[in-house]
Length: 488
Image (cartoon, rainbow, N blue to C red):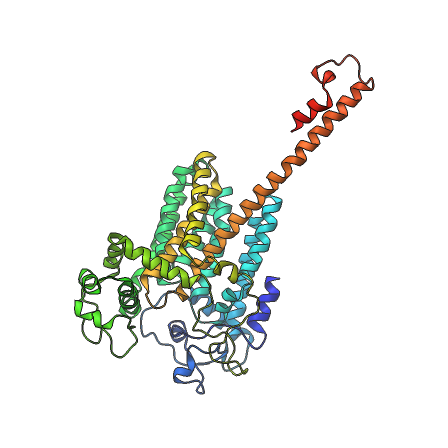
């Protein structure tokens, strides 16, 4: 089903993808790709998906590193091997993404086979709906870095529970590899390198069966932490400055009771209050006026939110109301030239997104994670459940991805929530599998009691009919009422 839906969405015209927001150049220019001459200026952005791209001389304007480059390189190699076209069809890239998706989904389905019958069925159905949602598939026909994040996160989930169930060297290495690919996919996912590094260091102390693999776990921690650090250090002013600006002027100041005080605390001239609500891409903003960046850094912003919990609460509540759908509201889906309007969105194969979109408030989304994480922690402490540690890790990753986007980019956080969406979906699927399994056990109890009652009544009737003599016990004198009471 995933293969059929993915092929229809990504390969059959009109192609469904996601319009260029301005980030395509980071992955296009290093590989010598550019728009055709008939698509110029602002026509390249926001409205449509483009399929045909011309070749030009490769160049790098700003240093940029992403594991998504591996997929682009594979697509170009496939194009050169199979196609004789003088231009690059982005569907080669979609085909590479779709092949990787099917491989990873096959692995994830294999992991779900280890669940009980009801949990397994629930997990497979929900995972299929989730993976086949057009909100995720649309990224596969783009030059965004999100496909690498989605695919590596899916692999991480599968390998995480495999490694927790069977901590073998191969499973640990696959988990570390997927975590490294995730940490190098985009700058905002670099913190996952440190988070996964802490997991690899802590898990041998929490799980006895991991202790023989302590040295391998330390090596895995070094690998994924190093991947995150490498991604962070590749960011230069051209990448970090616009999100920092947006975080302050369309983030902090919009939730502030005293903008001038908050600007001074962040190390920026309070006169920059006049640019509240401006973006870094406007010709007249706080940067062109000489007020930004001052002494402000992301570290100071993090400190600001930690010492101002009311501002953090306001920011969390405002962001979560607008990000629970993974359909970027300003970006169109359809291929250019097929009669669709600018920014029009595909409505096919979007059954899953409305489910998540209902959790669009802090009490619902926050309460879901609070309750499920508390239950997982309880199971981890009382029962030593290995899977509970996996769920707690995914919940921590979801929270990290949410706040990195919400606090790290005031203007563009909606698009950057795609990994949070995926991790939320995974947590929802796991919770649904748990509920299905517990519901099966609950419903099977009356059946078990009825079966016991039947066996006891049959034995009583056998005794009354002169069955095996010489076998005397208290069952010989049981009445039907006593049997009913015992079975109940």
